[in-house]
Every structure is written in C-alpha cells, then in structure tokens.
Length: 168
Image (cartoon, rainbow, N blue to C red; front, side):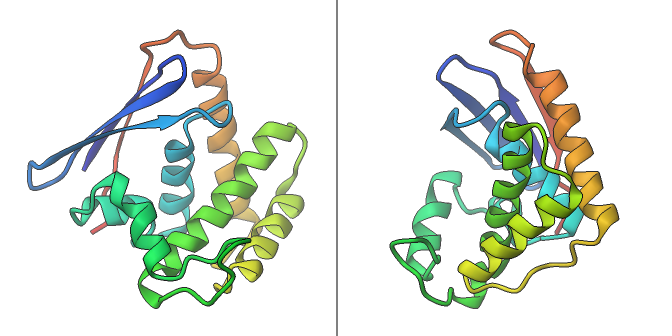
C-alpha cells in the first residue's frame, strides 16, 4: 500500500492506494509538529503491529472508520476505561506508543527509558499488553521520528511524505 501525506496549513491530506488498487483519502488536523499518522507508520512498522492503524487501512477499512470501529470494540480511554476487544488490541497498543513517541518529539528531551515508561503506562491504562519495547526498538522509533521532524518541520505547505506499507 502506498501512502502520500501532503502538508497543509491546518490539516494534512492523506492519499492511500492499496495493493488491490482501491483508493482512500482523508484529512487529519494538525496536533503536533509532524503528521500523527506518519508516527503511526514508524511505530507500527518498527514493532510489527500489522493490525494497527495502517494494517486496518490496508485491509480495506476507511481511515475515517477506524475511530468508530475502535469505539465500538471498547477502546479504552479516560471516558471508556474497559478491556478492548481482541480485534483492536494492536490498534490501541499503537496509539499508546505513538503518544509516547510524540511526547518525546514535543518535549525535545524524552529518552529511550522515558519513552518506554510512557508507553508502558499508556498500555496499562488501556488494558492492553505492552509489545516488545527493547532499547533498540525504542531508539529506532525515536531516531526515525526525529528525522521526520527535521524533514517535515521546516518544509513548506505542499511538501509530501511518501511511504509504503508492506505488512499483510
């Protein structure tokens, strides 16, 4: 699946072309210095979470449907603290770890240990097991996220990020 994220002023435009040729598009409001869905790609690819956000999109689910699917399956949040359905465990794991990597970017100072601790706390609060977050994987996610920030941050509106999701 090929994904293109185009930098906008208030939101970023995402175009997805799946392996079967089907296409999906969405917009995502900016909530930090890099596209949230790009951090999902980094986390999910690094950890092999093939049923996280991008795996669901690759399987044919619309990006806009993922949030509703998660709510219906018991996504744990401060308002809905409950054990989620097994079908969304990787999605919830990915979201909690993405949040920890984004916190590192936003603060500019969270290290491997701090990022792992945030991810572990988030997973525990969401009633999902913590994936293997060894030092190498966490360091790799942080390095890739910092490289993304270095490229995306100063880039003008219209800049594009492209990546290929290879997981089945």
